[in-house]
Length: 243
Image (cartoon, rainbow, N blue to C red; front, side, top):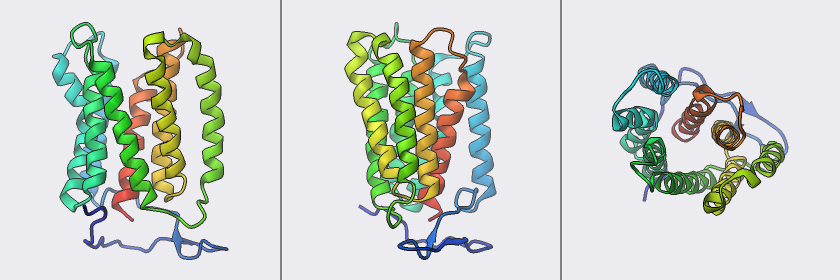
């Protein structure tokens, strides 16, 4: 399996470098365009905005259930397609698993009783894939590991707060998923800044979902949850595609 494409990326400028003990010639900045393409980047953000709007308007504007779920998954599907096109098959599989999770978690549980479980397992698979991909994209000495510790402290406070409110039949699955989220973020902390930023945004999105799902009157919205998550996927794509 080919993890990283050999096709060159033409950039108008070189990245600034962080120079210091053990970190010489390590790029810690990044371009904000997917594969230096303003077209792909624009399409992604259009899909993101449409997805957030459709989630915002669930109660006021009715769409067919499957169509709304596919709109929600569209940003991840786009990133999966781009990665597949350039030969990053492992990363493409990770985004595809995220898209599958997006679809199943958006389906109503009364009509699709296993939707939550299938969606959670799909996202767990995506987290494992991105942990492996991050392992193969290391930075010397893992300069972002101290920031990972900050994420863990925040996560532990929130998990401790919501754990008792999670229904018993879901508790093991939720704990396993958040454990994978922490592990994946640990591996991302050893990779480049875009990968770690993307993983951390996904992390914050899922913590926000946990709060809004199990703590009443939590002031969260689709912008907090889906918006942060899709931005997280975007920066993961930047980290794997542009380096």
